[in-house]
Length: 119
View 1 (cartoon, rainbow, N blue to C red):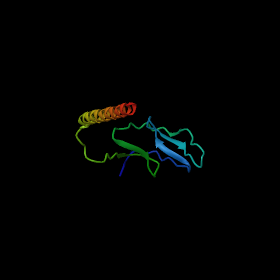
View 2 (view 1 turned 180 degrees about the horizontal axis):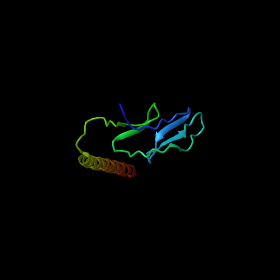
View 3 (view 1 turned 180 degrees about the vertical axis):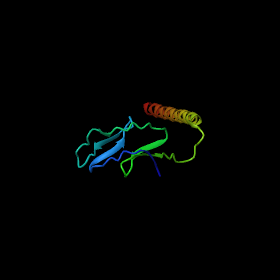
View 4 (view 1 turned 60 degrees about the vertical axis):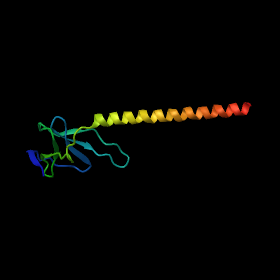
């Protein structure tokens, strides 16, 4: 699945999360368990791996730094956001107009009833 980038041979301890930090070094942080908060990250090994875009870097079972191509699911679609936004705007305007008409009609009806009561 993945390809080895650097041989480090880190021995894992239970209760820690191991990861490759922004500098490309192997770090670990205490995992949160049973209401207790996790710890802050601590460097375990200085590797200095240069990260390439589109790859996920991780510590494999042997304790070495490996990487796997990130799968971006689905087919690339054409951008239609501008049209959708415009359509939504138009629909919203229509809805507002309709509601305004209804309110106006309601007001007229109320006014008519009041006039009838006064007579």
